[in-house]
Length: 101
Image 1 (spheres, rainbow, N blue to C red):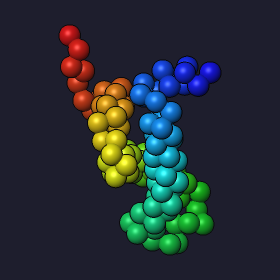
Image 2: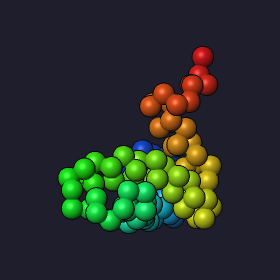
Image 3: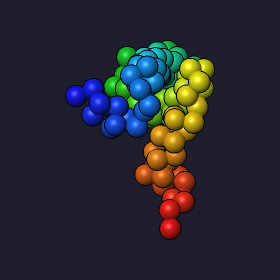
């Protein structure tokens, strides 16, 4: 089972997999926390009571998560791994062109 997970995430060993999970966990939590402050900083605190706040927060969290994933991954020495993930995401949403012929 563990070998299957290691193969899915394309990592070298269990230690590398644990680091990857830690980076994903920190990035997800931090993007939610910072997302609130970014929305409040841009639109003000009066927006919190409105339903539109959640829509804006979701829109802000997506790019914030992508940026934080690279930053946190780099701090943990995994820039190359997370940059490959980022390239796949950016190709899927159409921002980057695929390098495959």
